[in-house]
Length: 463
Image (cartoon, rainbow, N blue to C red; front, side, top):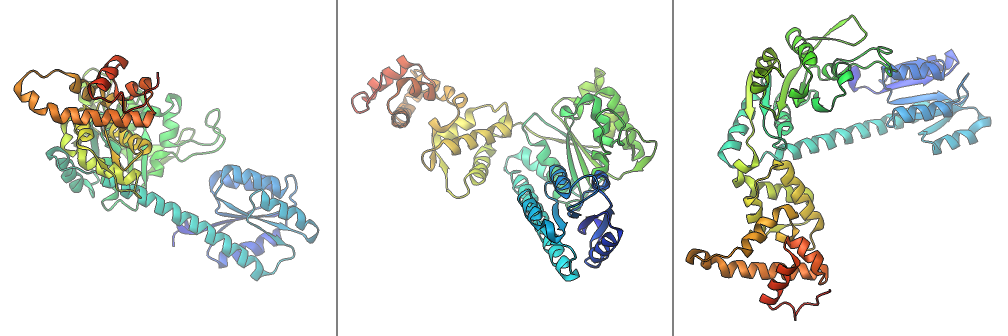
């Protein structure tokens, strides 16, 4: 078993004999052990490695075990801490459990007693790690399943993902915001031989300009103001796996130069260090900008573009694959209301398919989540949709259709309109102002339709 998978154990005590005994016990249990003779030394250890379990004496030279416990919990909330105490301070040790300590050990302790406590702490740590892994796995599976659709364009993307899942070649994913570029990157990573390796997603547009290099490649402690501890960086964190550079076009030109060097030389240098560290990372980049046009106008490096654009994946906007909307709606129904079987009326689905979706799949996801959250029944209708989707529908109902072909549809539309208005009025308890806002029509138009459908007498209308 590698050190990465073993429980990391830190013993903090000013007595060397106690530390040596605890280290021996920890090693016999398969832990990766480290020691500190003071709270300050323990905090220094925390800067370079994160222990899973800590055993600390209550009475330390310049800082109490309680103070150390609070510092550890602030820095590493999932780390389990046990307190060692003499018989005279058991009450204090019990108080520390209220502050987050896992348990306390009385001195002098028996080896078997200490082993039992450490074993329980380790089991809790492993359980938390397993749950975290399972949640991440389920989350990834749910996200990967969102790659649904039978349209020609999305099927082309899925076939390309299948061919790229084991490739180490750089991939450039192009598409408008909200089309699912990170979803494609995750599908390429988690559906192939890289699935058990690191996947690091970086939003290049959100990185602080003055700290981009430190964030990507790491930095040494004290390398700049605020660097209170060293960091290995996002590229080294992805070593052996995949790094996803979203919105790569937002990187400043100076940073593009440094990134190109890293991709060519396959090594990084931390800010504040002269040492170069070899890395082996598959790069998937994405942008909603036309990078080819960007390098032509000088805002993106041409050599970096060709370095990244070995294989390109073009994601179609949702308006070009509207035939996939019903399948996506079913997926989002399952995601947001797994305990209920929901369905959507034909009129509501027609609204979705007539809309252009400038926010693409992300906007559709938000729309369905809103409808599921605000619904009062298990059927999603037009009035459950956001107002932005309803005006075109309402306008369509109000449009006079003089032609014979249009008149053939009038009856169906009128029935649908009457039912919709009646349902909305039931929801708002006859509030005309609120009903008009929900339906996307004026109060005068609403009054005219109420009169037309003879709903004024049957429905209690508030002024």
